[in-house]
Image (cartoon, rainbow, N blue to C red; front, side, top):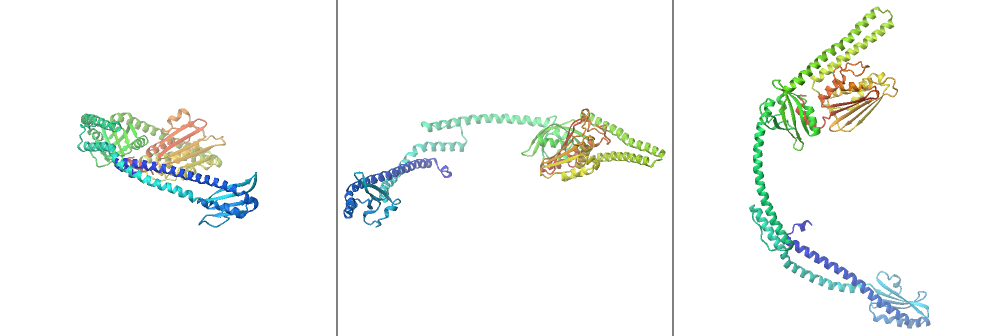
Length: 596
């Protein structure tokens, strides 16, 4: 088929006509050979059946009088029929009575027992007045039919060859009527393409399909001329639009830029972009290396990776002179070419008054108030217990007082530990390592009071075979706080306490789900649970910093936390952490690891 496609149209026509001719000749020859074989076979068998009936009529007398000599004389009459190779007269009990064989035939009086393969076998009953005296059997070699057929086939071959030669001759003469106009059209098309001149058209007086082909080609040339004129008009408009765009790009009040994700290099930017960044144009370095610090960048990049675009995302930059610059970024990720294209606006003044001062002042006041109160509370308790112990003389009561002192000291220690954890989370740069998440969960459970754990059914279900990498210290802080809370706020009289921990690790992220059937979180408290020093439960003896620290740690890791709770029925905490084993995420880390 491939070779046929590579032929010229002239040779294709010749090949197609000859193929049809040969197929027709072969088909007719096949049918004729089939007809010749069966008609020859039928003619021979009809002739032999007539001969067998004649012999049967003459063989009655010899069989009745058991005259074998007469029987042989009768059977030998078939010698005048060359098609018969063997002839037999048999008695009614199949005993050989008379026998004949042709010249050069095998002398075997029992050949009729195995005559089916190479011979036609003709039988006829010998009877007289409805009495059976025996039968006549004639054997005709099948080669006679084959010889007759081969004779016909020889004539067919001669006719086949002659017809084929005539077809070749006529095809060579007639194909030009079809191929010549098409070749002319092809040559004209090649000339048009070579000179790129679409103003011409081809004249013709062809009819039918070829004429239609010429007309359509001329119509195509007309359309190309129109398209060429339209394309010139579009190019002029495009040039004008490009000039307008360049003016808008250079003089825009917002920054317009394109950045290569893998390297962090800006490949294109207008003047306003560099003014907002407060740096000189630099195209051969990571743009984020021009700043001391970049905040919220990981959240922005994670949103970009997940959705493919960002809209009005806010990022805080700290320039090398330590000046804060708040910017709003919008744009779209081109994943195919691995670049981000967007616009940037300076919102520093707006953020400086609305977020920076309010948030810092509120958290500072809140921190001082709660820290001093929570540190003072156990100290006052200890002082009171010491005063009571001085008045107490019973050793048993003094031991109980000391136990309460120990509880207050541990409470103070927990508060100080939480404060240190919060401080370290903001100061210390994390190390990305491979984490066995199941083992880390088990270590967190081991840190819980055994007397509390033994009353709770804990189920751990880990899924996913992907390698998980993150900061083990910060991941441990998240697990310790969440699992501790799930065990701490159980309903005491519930005999079926449980904590279900499920993880699913993919190449993109770790999904962690912690469910319990504890006392739950009041509805009016759920919006405040991540606030500093906030305690949602009256039974809480903690510092109120746990979930606040968890939220800050997850922000550092680029993760998210979602809590749903129903009072009296339990709480469900879902955490999503990026998997830094993913090379795609590592390309983002390279942009922010010095600024996270």
